[in-house]
Length: 498
Image (cartoon, rainbow, N blue to C red):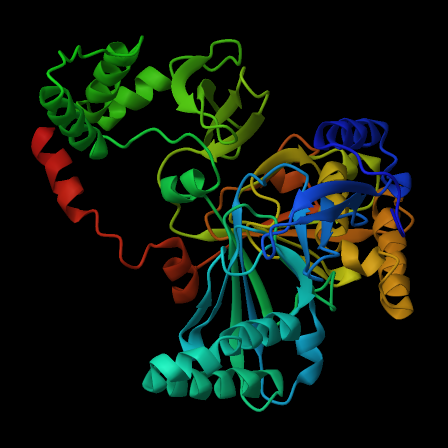
């Protein structure tokens, strides 16, 4: 074959790609060519596959199809790595006249949705396949696709064609920078990305939120999703109707352990809060562990979550949870704060000066933000999730996370000034753990669910650890959902039962 190697079958290519991946030699991954059907003319064309890795980002498969009979061409990007534990939603504000923002690189996975609220415009996942582009490229491609069938549409429906022409004009005005707009990239798989040229500092025009996937999103990604208690009766009625129609006897089956689990949940729901807390917290030793039936966050299979409750001195009661899936090997661990929501948030400041400070235990909750003033480093809440580590381990996780998310700034295609900026920041970040200079760690938690251990007998005697309480702002309460929370009916019900 011209300009390429011999054709191979899909099985051989997959085995070779898997071997290369195991050896972690992505830089020398071969280019595979597979004969595949052209969807335009029905003849056989060639698909070229290349497994590569964006430095410090993720593994991807680059695919390019070409048909020598009708000259049809197509290319796309698919992610070869695993799905992320949570979905992500990027929001980019593009002011009018800021043409440079349109050049930001965008990684869009197959499951991502792109929206422009100002035009009430949405690009569904099936409309544009996964790919590597820019903000401008995404909008231009959408406008071109809308215009592709305009001539045929004018012959059939002139009114609709005229409306589409007006909309495309508005869409292209965004590309030219004549109007301000907002680009929202929502990906339940968590594999999409918008470049932040100001990294590692926060970009005032770019925000990101991580969220737990819904059952509908889990199902759209191909996971097995168990029906909710509200949906189960409807499904049972459908099964009974189908069985009656086919004159088949239906035998109701209960999964093993479900009767006891339902009874346990019912007992918790009907019991008093004090009794439930006493039952869950009767053991303080880690070896006394309770279990709960759960669902794997990766493959949606049934698994077991182990948990125990303990109290951290000078902090609060916490629940340590760990989930392991025997089917796919997925593992996760987290720490949840117990008890009621505190009336105030807290801000923990650690003045790191020696190795003893690097060894302090750290509990960072999901809502806590992290700052290092000496580096102008600030991580928004939810960036790293809830973790239990040390001060040194927290800095290491921050470094790894920044390299993974902002890998474009370190790749071969990045500008020299961007790469130099990142390498300089990385060296400054490594100096924190080597203690070449004293530095400050600030953990701000609106829920007061974070903790840093002290090195003296009491927290008051630790001069390098400062814990401050503050009143939450209205915006913080709104983000936490506390402004609309009304527990008066529940409080009255508990008072009547006492």
